[in-house]
Image (cartoon, rainbow, N blue to C red; front, top):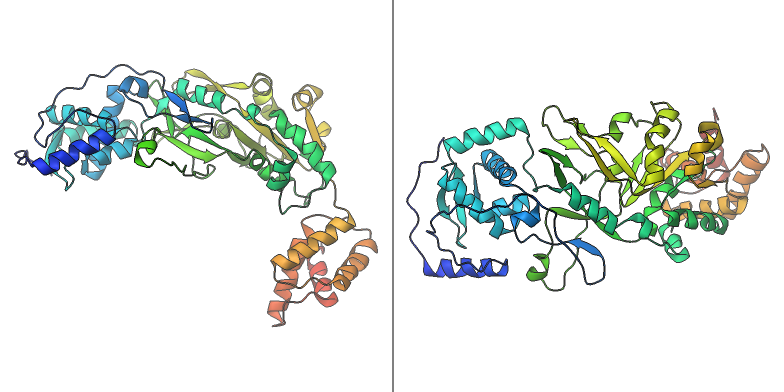
Length: 475
């Protein structure tokens, strides 16, 4: 149903004063009233976003003070606003600003222009004096057409140049990991000093490493925790725009967003550009399901929204290729795709439009495999991965220590005589190698055994016999 034009609401001096005060807090000193006449906004073409370091020296995105510094064109902003109002039907100025993550003072003149063009109508004000707009028939038609072109109407995208600058300012190569930080990152895992001394320099290189060894010794767990050693957060854009294509960078399935605490309250928070998300340095894991499509920009045929490839989502963090050598694609195809980026630290991506762009390739790549690296790749590629670290089987003392740790986690009382029985009978007597995953797996079997027989949770020779018979029956 089309919203019919309504007469502007009467002036209210109290609401106008409150509204103007909010504008001043948000950085707009121009007084407004509830019956302000619409005026056409003046917008420059897109440009690079401004940035500012925070008090602690870390890079952060600064809220733009104009459409030029925001890097957003008039046409792009109109599309986002009309698609949003087309879907919700009605919204306030501040609600629109919050949706597209741009300052109120940049959004308001565009809403006035859309009203002058009769795409939206002023239908009232809120209790705080905020304008409330509804979409008209012409605005609905335009919003529908824009939605068919691309369904995205989230945060206004930033420019590619701004994204490249942000990666350079937060590069993984600029991070230094200390022995204490590495120990903290691996807290809860059994890793000996020799392994830590090999991992530390490899992580500090910011280049890449092979983790290889027998299955079940924690290669994936080690790779997952590597990024935690850096102990910092980074800012990434929610989306970037390149010649009309919108590419989503922020992905809740791989990025963990954090809230930065600002001591100055509202005024401090308005310094940050809301189009960027502050996240923990990312750890992106791809296993045997990895395909070549996931390494390129892909476009959803229904939404027409582009999705960034995995290596782009992992910039400033870690990309783990788990179970390397068992991907659906041949190993040499994957290696040929990355041999230049690993050397040059930048990558070339093909957009659905046919345009080729250069983007940073700035992550620590960890190849985790059960196979010998020399059996998988040739010398040219091995040279580009400077660190090859074997994850060995645990010693009997480490195995016993892990049994005790897992007992306490699972509410068992550790018993040395039961540990002796398990090790002597089921490992030493048969020459079975120790694996770091086995204490957890065996104790899970013991717990299920006790629960089934309605016995107290207690480790015993009988329970371990049952667990071993099940767990190693075909191994």
